[in-house]
Image (cartoon, rainbow, N blue to C red; front, side, top):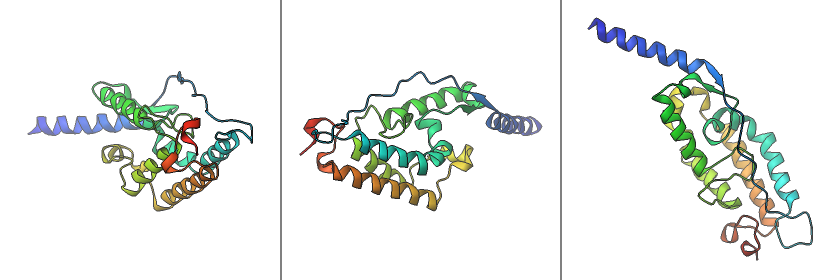
Length: 188
């Protein structure tokens, strides 16, 4: 019985120590994807000014919260918990981060990218679904990162940004039924 108590106590101490000691992450090696937009106000394409306005609002209203609650998996952070480099936890952490970025990569602000081919509006709709259903952050992540819980006021701020962003995209003629990545085939 003493061995079990010692093992459990040691495990708890190890988890606590590795959770609260942070290490610097390697510098970002990814490059920001080129935006498919136009600076010509008469061109048949999404205007860069629209994307810049959406991204500016994202950086002001959503990014501060996302840095604490989303970017450890869906982006790039300067520091990670020590457990993220200690096997076997490191394998799980790296797998989760790779999977998260594949689905929804927020590394370079809006527009978000991902290998699943999200377009502008689809990307925002996916974020609405995740927030409405409380899917993110996942419970296993919350267990180790209690500050990552998204409050009602934070959800409201995200939803307001999404609503405004979709309105700006709609002014450009980009809606759910014809949403795209800014290419001509996605327009009216």
